[in-house]
Amino acid sequence: MEMLRDDGRRAEGLRPVSFERGVSRYAEGSALVSWGHTRVLCAASVEDKVPPFLRGSGSGWVTAEYSMLPRATHQRSPREISKGRPNARSSEIQRLIGRSLRAAVELPKLGERTITIDCDVLQADGGTRTASISAGFIALFDALRWLRKNEKLPSIPLKNQIAAVSVGKVAGEVMLDLCYEEDSAAEVDANLVMTGGGEFIELQGTGEGGSFSYAELAQIVEFGWSGIAEIQKMQRDALELDEAERELFKKCE
Image (cartoon, rainbow, N blue to C red; front, side, top):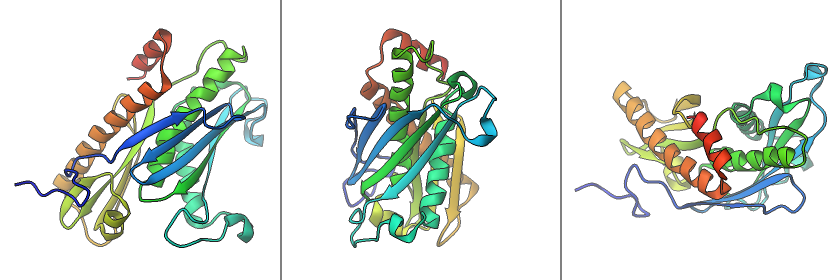
């Protein structure tokens, strides 16, 4: 008999995931994701400027910032602004989110604009970076819609649909989408970021208290892609795509 996890899931099962769009009144795009007990608010802001290295290039930029509210976890953490800069973990995560979401957009077609995705963790129970990427994509797409609707772009410059999920090895078994208790006990921790066509944007895998075999790596990838495909369907459903947008997404596969 297959052993079930503490919350009743099978090894390859996702936690309950839902996306709510338009939760920020002022942002050009926004999404709140509830992923198990993890909750992340992502807001996309459009600015008519680019970093210095892109000025005069005609190309745009997508970047991200990530932070956790003081009581997002079991104990209060000081706000990072009180330290004057993000901590090393937040810096690493926001670079990952930015890299991942830049892969969604044809930057030369964006024009000299920057879209910043602010990801604020309201409650953390594992998988905050993958939840940020997956909800950040929805916020980003709505910001691109806003640019088209306001005649700042002739079309939506979408290159890839992007989603992410965590996979780990716990007590010798590969498991999809780890909650905090599983993540804290994991021998191996991996994060996968993939396109709608099943190509990798990022694959992070670390033996934190053990190692993993080639066969286990294959299983990590299999579980990860299966979970990402589910998440991408949820993204499309949440975005309420019209016929032209559905065709755009099909071209990204």
